[in-house]
Image (cartoon, rainbow, N blue to C red; front, side, top):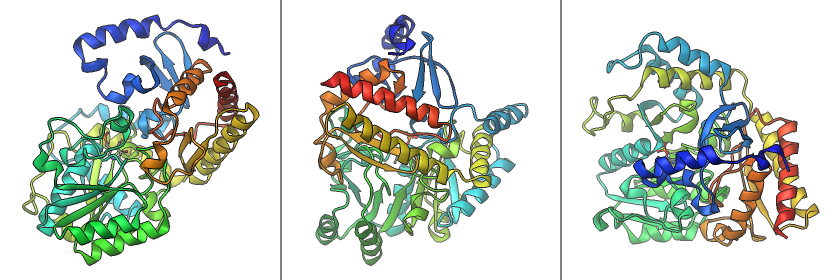
Length: 434
Ligand SMILES: *Cc1c(COP(=O)(O)O)cnc(C)c1O
């Protein structure tokens, strides 16, 4: 056991108690409450590189990475310098600034399908706006999505949704009128037959939205024939294909999963890495479609803080760093090695059967021996055992995402030292389970 384990969590506990009195559940986003792993949240004081430091003096190897943005680790010098320098000019103008233009130009270079881009403030805003645009452009209403995929908390997407909803054992939310959810069809991921059937059954499909690599049900890789069917069926039925790369964008490859798998979407949503830890999202795509957005077109979408100079400075600095020295080969090696070592730890500890799915910068350890190809197979994992594993990992100084249905995000700052320590922690944690 590391020193961390002997430390108390009294300061986190006190903050959590105060938080619960004034913030619903004590957190500003549900997954942070750690209910699924029967733990209480650690309140974080600061972060650096691959590490998180909590208010009680604990130190943890971080695999949450702010849920995706921190591909280069925490406190990347270029990101900090860009924010510091921009900060001197002011914090927001409510008028255009140069950095927004640079951001849109750079996004278009890195993700060529995004001929035009609109900046927003979160992934949720990006997907909601893309769906409205798709509905306006096609003149149709219905949406197809996939079970266990998460596209933010917009009304239309809370049907068999992944991430925090799957973690809480729910898939939709009160407060979403039936009239809205009835326009969303959710079908199994990687299921070409179900996709064909959905198009046969409904002639009013405006769009299909998908995660090109699922992260929000844990990591699930797309099958090539599924990706092919997505493009062919949307085209044949005059529906738009919306590639939700809020998680995968700039993570699995510089040009996102669409570069890696040669996907040609009509619209793309971005978030997380594009803001380097500040609140940013973006949506974009074919010029002909994007020109329908106000004020060049009639589809209304706006934002008081959209294109905020500090957020643009931070995001641009991170994207420029990624472009100048693409870390994807390195990050792939890091992720591969992590997968290999965790798998070894599971067998040497005679631990539970595991299925590890991974791709550059994203990894999930499912506690099941079956292949995980969709939400139903992910849900065969032993989530109670996962909770035990998670708590044991925390005792060993590893801060893993507190849900079976989330991806873990290694960063470029996870060197051999952190990976070896993580493997040791997994071995000890697996041993503690039996
Ligand atoms: C995180 C995420 C979102 C939502 O982004 P927020 O910034 O949390 O609103 C949407 N889609 C995907 C694929 C995500 O991973």
